[in-house]
Length: 125
Image (cartoon, rainbow, N blue to C red; front, side, top):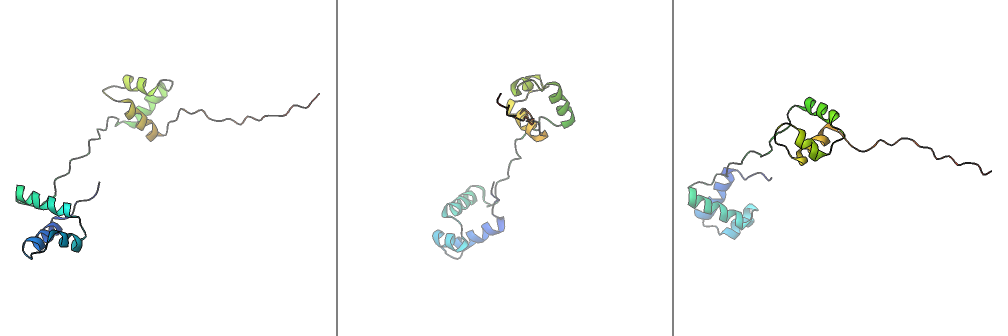
C-alpha cells in the first residue's frame, strides 16, 4: 500500500488554495498530485476539521502457526495427508490455504525426487 502524504504537505497544499487563491487544478499541477486527492483533503477538513491521514489498521494476518518446530514434526507425521486433511487435524481453526503457505515457508514439497534412471539400449540379437 502506498504511503500517505505528510500532514505538513497537505496543509501546504490547502493553504495555497485557501489563502493564496490558487485554483485546485493549478495546485494539482504545481504540487504534482491529483485534483481528486485535493478534493478528498478538503472534504476531510470540512468533516473533521483536520487533514491528518487516517490511521491504518494493522494487517489482519493471524499467525495461526507460531511454533514452526511443532509444525515440522506435524508434517512429518502426516506427510501422506492432503492439505485439507492436515487443516482438519491441526489443533484449532485453520484453513487449507494457511497450511499451504506454511508448507511453502518450511520448504516442504510433495513432489517426488527424481532419480537418475539410465535408459540403456539393448543390443539387437
